[in-house]
Length: 273
View 1: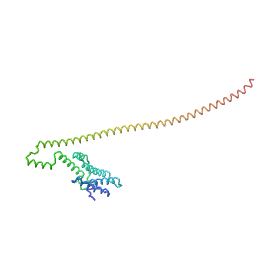
View 2: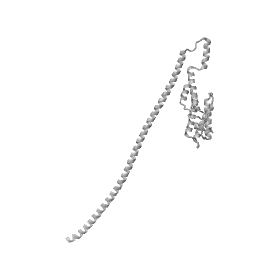
View 3: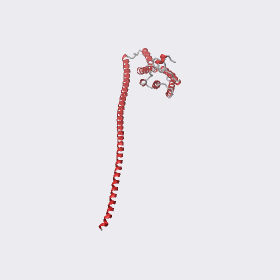
């Protein structure tokens, strides 16, 4: 059980399940291995990161899973380790440096003993290492230059002139500036895409809002027309009933009048003879 100060300083130091404890231990081990200098044929870290992904997926579906912020932090660290391994597999040091800049290290220390997140330290170390590799690719390695300097001293051939060193430094600055310009261009494009997405989202929201208003108005008008139709149907039915009753009385009166007229006609006709 961690001390109270460590628990207050470190939000992950809460009551954890066995699966979460195993994930934290393996994650701490992976961070330590990533900070060390490893051989190119080292395969354990890849296997460990794959196991971390499986454990993280199992932790997400667990009933007694931690808070969403804690799971997000775990996912952030696992994604960082996975991205770091993928960056190490690239061939060019410039590609490695560019891929390393897009990695996002963890924000919270994994254990209470850490003052700074280990992934952040690994990120800075890998950035410095890739920058050093870029410099060695441009200026040549120290091991290849020392024998050359010895041979030049023995044969009396003068070494590189200061102008050559200045030219190499200028080339290095140019490459770094190109990478910086490329990053700025990518950032501007991403910002433009974000603005365009926001504009399209607002436009779609406005259109949907107008459509909803139109649909609500149409439904309201349909309800009103239905009520009017019911009222007019009732009035027409009443009017039809009234018309039928009036016509029936007229027919009855007409029949009675004809009957009476026939009787009177029959009685009057013999008297005329």
